[in-house]
Length: 206
Image (cartoon, rainbow, N blue to C red; front, side, top):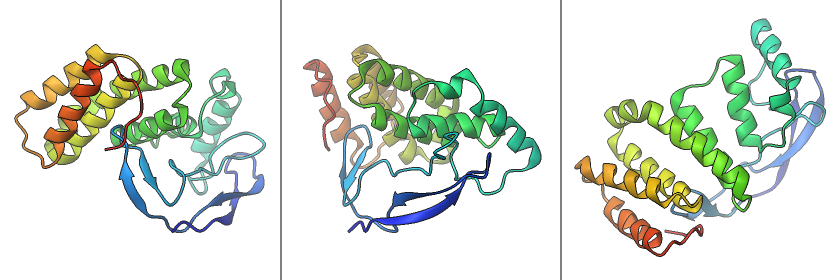
């Protein structure tokens, strides 16, 4: 079960102290085809967003050069745009130099879950997610083929939900052509292909 708690946080940019709601534990009962969990809490998990500048208090104390880059980010037009917290987390990690390929994919996937139901923003997020995965696809497959397979199905379903059925189908084609035999993946691929054939853009549970 998820138990709500309040946690104290301090903004690493301007020093604002605030509290945010989260949980120390939760259970996952299943997932949507795009990877979004369902369980005893709301997903994705809330991030500690500074109420004054919106920066995320997840980095601990920033080094002087990181803080300078973070300050420039929060003063930029990019930061002023109406975006979700996980999209902002990706921006922040990139700006201060803590982004990696896998982190970018994770943050952008979480951002798509937050933007579901907002077609314009959702499509933009999915486009960024697809590009981020392509950047690291070969390396990710070499390191963990099973995880790579499932992330490919997550992104294919995000593309389907954005209405890009051609891209989703092509991604599944490439995944099947890889010849990987990962337990559970064929069933997910088959279900996704059915949804693509029906022109179904809904978020569907596995």
